Image (cartoon, rainbow, N blue to C red; front, side, top):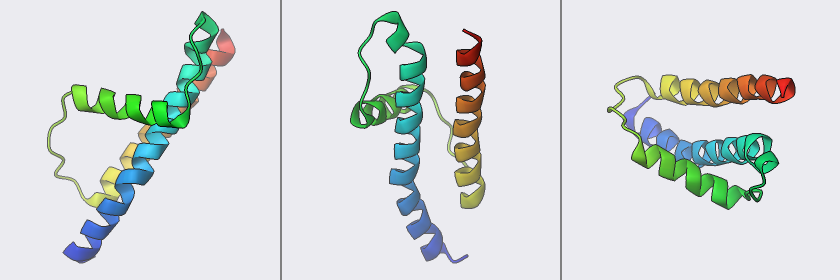
Length: 91
């Protein structure tokens, strides 16, 4: 893949990955925080919270291939949701 194609794919992935992360935040919030009495979150709030958490946690520059970054971040989000789904069903 050329460098230009990688740049375009990376730029396209940013909003998709951010929305996936926001959706995960809204889902987890609904499973674990709303039952404690907090209000539910909309997707915009989940997206914002997700970006804020990402901003305040330390990250090192990633030297991996773009496809590896996209695949691993997507799988990480889905695995966390899967394990949290199990935890939710054990409550």
